[in-house]
Image (cartoon, rainbow, N blue to C red; front, side, top):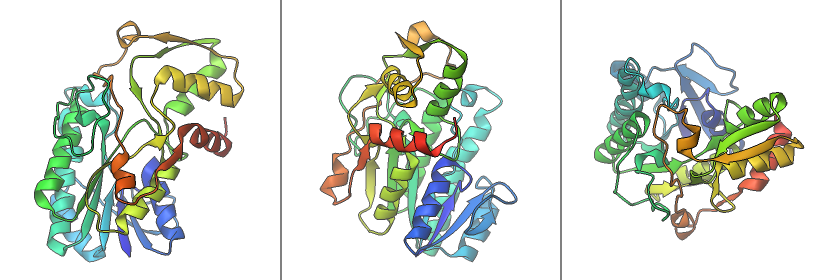
Length: 296
């Protein structure tokens, strides 16, 4: 299959391209930069430019598009001057991609987020739940992207993920390791609950999915149970051999974020196995493999 991957320079796009190439597919990367460090064919594409999308996707003529490109700076998305840019990328850009996929009849996979829900309660969110109530500009615009895909296409996957980390980018683990070098004690939020997602593992699952026609909404994070950011930080330092002390605090006590964070990021992933897909490995194992891959 020829598969166009948007956001090819990002954590997930990088790993998706590698996985597709390993399987003998023909990945074509795209991003806004003139060029990126990638072994596959690359096309420059600004997804917010509808005419460019309308021209380039038919020229590439992929069998599928895996749409990883997104504005993911959650706090910066709340700044008034950034809101039009965030919506242009996450909502309008996604609609541009979906429209182009519809015109050439190819399938589309859209990578979304737990932020489309209101983050309340303790019950894991099911993938087909429509009880949307995003708390932030980021969550709202990602939801608008979801709706654009579902309203435009029949052949689509919407895959929600959470707490993402990968080798090709910045993330919570890198932040903790960098700060842990400088300070003996850190305060980390303990009342936001979810599960991490390693892009290397997720890329395998996304490739498994795009090879099928089992369309619909899915949730995908690593296995290993639900944890808090505090729990995650403690395990990061334990595996890295740091002596850093971690102090649990509530979101209210921490008080530094512009954007409201969901307290409940628990995602129900049972639909994966129900549809014959292999779950991701435990997050503890993923963390160990990731730490071996990075220079810290």
